[in-house]
Amino acid sequence: MSNPTNPLPLKAPARVPVLPAVLMGILMLAGCAAVGPDYVAPDPRPPQNWHTPLQDGLQATACDKAELTRWWENLADPLLSDLITVALADNPSIKQAIARVRQSRASRAIADAGRYPTLDTSGAITTNRISQSSSGTPSGIERDWYTAGFDAGWEVDIFGGVRRSVEAAEASLQATTADLENVRVSLAAEVARNYIEARTYQYRLDVALANIAAQEETDTLIRSRFDAGLSSDLEVQQARYNLENTRSQLPTLRSGLEAAKNRLAVLTGQTPGSLHAQLEERRPIPVPPLAVAVGVPAETLRRRPDIRSAERQLAAQSARIGVATADLYPKFQLLGSIGLESINSGDFFDASSRFWSLGPSVSWRIFDAGAIRRNIEVQSAIQEQYLAVYEGAVLSALEEVENALTAYAEEQLRRAHLREAVDAAQRAADLARDRYSAGLVDFTSVLDAQRSLLSFQDALAQSEGTVTTDLITLYKALGGGWEHVSP
Image (cartoon, rainbow, N blue to C red):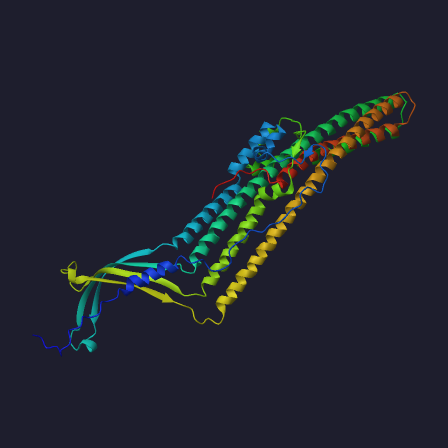
């Protein structure tokens, strides 16, 4: 029998698997909410309707998205549509904006890579010689060292610093994409403006040439009357300076036309002079459509890419505050290594040459003289700046539309008055010429009537171009001229 006084042998306590428990705890903490402010998009609360009364074809009905995207087709000028299509494909500004989108996309991928483990491999063969003084031998000791292995690491995003950086990169990509769309808006409008400018110069040249022809007839008439003793030399000189003054306008008009053509070539990504053959044929200034849907202010703010870009930049900066805040907290990493090392190449692949290590690590910036908190303040102040930029973009957008609505309506009214003035001036010029031929009025009446006719016709030509240009400005202000590009 066993001695009852002897205690039974005790079993050794089971070893607690500390490492798996630590890993499980870290992974659970990784699901915590990210530090820093959660972004809430601002609500601009625009007015329900435009302040400017809608008239002369302007309507508050909702804009057709497809129609606004390619608004230039409403002008029914195939050459203009072709030029804009070429510009949207080949203009250097477009190519630059597209490259920025690719850059932002790559930056977003770099930020996203921080959420995943890293794996490095290395290998080396080194020869070491121990000095004679340390080895105590006359010749020293030389030794080869063979190593190869893998090192793995993973920063566990417990406090969301990496998640916030990905959030910032994603918002920046969306802002850059909106910038590309805004470049398209501006470029389409710029091409159309220069095209209208070229057609307006052609119209004004035609007006000047028609007046020169009429004034040449008058000059011939005056000279004939002078030769017959019916007119004075004063009237001859008056007819001459009136004619030469009109001729003097031609070089300025031709120079403006050349500049508009060259600018169109550059906007379409071509060398100056490339479009002269296409633009040589005289064509009328494109006429605006009878009805233009402008929608309401809220629709414009949602559609304009510059406002969307400002809002996305604000969102990106809000996420950067979270990145800065995460530096206040410790950083946890899982590190591991596995490999082979040996001093002899022959037993390098033996089991005895294997080594490995695995375990978590933590680092924490305990003291930095307040640099982290100051950086949070910096990022917060930058966010306030982006908010101000966004608010300014909203106000500027509303201002642009209001001004464009007013300019378009008022220029149409001005054009109507100029048309009446041209008709009256034409009748006055005809009457003055007939009465002068009949000897009922002096030649001064003819000169005044011809000068007034040229002035009103030139003003009407410019107004015809301005009406269409104002409509182009309105389309641009409404955010038309872009197609959504997926990041």
